[in-house]
Length: 544
Image (tube, rainbow, N blue to C red):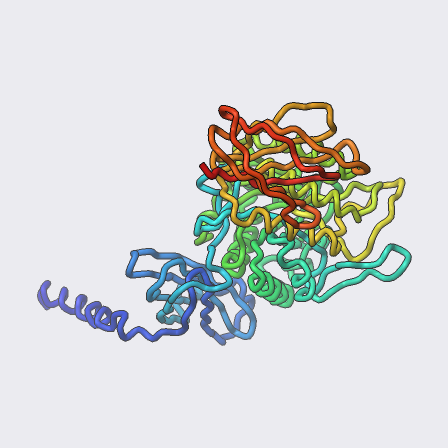
C-alpha cells in the first residue's frame, strides 16, 4: 500500500465521523443556560469496587464558542455512572461520555445537549468576586449578592421555631418545610461533609465501616435532594469536604486522626493524598454543579499550608466552574484563598454587637478579600433568642461590605446560663421578618458603593455607617447607648455636590417612613435623622 493510500485509509473514517456532524447528533435532553444536565452510562460487569475500578470522564464541547469542559463522572449504584454539567452558553453542546477499566474503554456514548434560554432557577450563574468591589460577591450575570447565611443541623430535616427549653421537645421540620420558612430571609446555605465523624452536624459521605475509596450512597442521595430543594428556592451554597474541629478535640476520621500535621495531613504521604484526591474528585463530580464555594475545612488548626496548597490546586484543576475556595480557620494570606471565612460567637447584648463586628472586620478586610463569617451566633451564657441582635449583625455586616452565616439551631429556645453552651442563633419568625426587610432594602443596590464619611461622634450614643458611590448612598444608624428611649442624630455625609432624595426606612417594620429632599453643602450633606429607638436606615439618591 502506498503512503497516499495509507493516508486515505486514515482520513476516510474521520470524514465519515465528521459527516455525522451536529445535524444528526442525537439530542439526549434540553436544558436552560446555567441549568443542570445529567447523563448516564451503564456497565454491569462484576467489580470489586465500582467507585475505584472504573474511571468515568466526559468532555462537553460547544462548537459555537469553542468551549470545552472536562467533567468527571461518579458511581451512583446499580451499575450506573452519572455525569452532571451546567452549560453556560446557548446552542448545541456535544457530550462525549466514557468509562474506562484498566485503561480500556468499556462504555462510550456521544450525544447532544440542546441549551435554550435560561434556567429559571439558576439564571444568575455561580457566585464570584464582584468586579466592581473586591469585598463583595456577585453572580456571574453581574447581579450583586448580599448574603444572609444559615447552617442548620440535620440532613432530612432541621430544627425551627421550637419551644422554650423544658416546655416541650426539640421541634424539627422536614427540609422542604424548613427551607420554605427560610426562603426570602436567608439566601446562603452551608453544608458540612463528615470524613468519618458527624460532630458539628456533618453528613457522613465517608464512614469508617466503608473505608477509603467508597462513599455512602444513601447520604449522597439525601444531599442530592437537599441541593434540589435549595435550588428551587434560589439559595447559594457552601460545601465543606472535611469536618475537622481539631482546635477543640481529637477525633478519629476515616483518613486518620484530626490532630496531626503528619499522617494524612502530610503531603509527602502520597498514599493518603491519593485517597484524598479520589474523594475530592467524587464530590466535585457529584456536587460542583450545585455548589458556589468550597470551604475545605471547618475549624481546623493542624493542616499545613503546603497540604492545603496542593489540595486547592487539585480542586482548581478538576472543578470545571472555578468555584471560589476558602477554609476555616481562615488562611487569608494564601494565594489560592479567595475568601476570608472566620467564625464568631458573641457574648454581648444586641446594642454592643456592632462594635465587636466592627473590630473584626477592620482586621479581616486588611487582606483585601471578601469577608464572610461562615459561623456566627450567640456565646454561651446568653439565650439564643435575640432577634434584635441578629438584625443588627446583618445590617452592620452589610455596611462593612461583609456578611454572616448563622449557626442556627432553632429547634428550641435556650435560656441564659452561667456555663458555656447555647452557641447558636434562634432565627424565629421575628428574626426572619427582619432579614426579609433587609433584602427588600438591599436587593437593587449597586455593589460599587464603598464606605463613606458619615459624621462625627457627638456623644449621642448613635453609631453611624455609610456607603456611597456618589449617586447612591446608604446610611445606617444604630442607637447603641440604649433601646429604651428615642433619639435623633446629626449626619454629615460625604456626597459630592448635588441635590438628593433621602428615603428613611425602618429595619424592624420594613416600612418607608419618610421622604425628603436635601441640597448638599459643598461636598457634604448635613441633616438630621428621623426619630428612632434602635436602628434606622436611609436610601439616598442623587436627583440633580
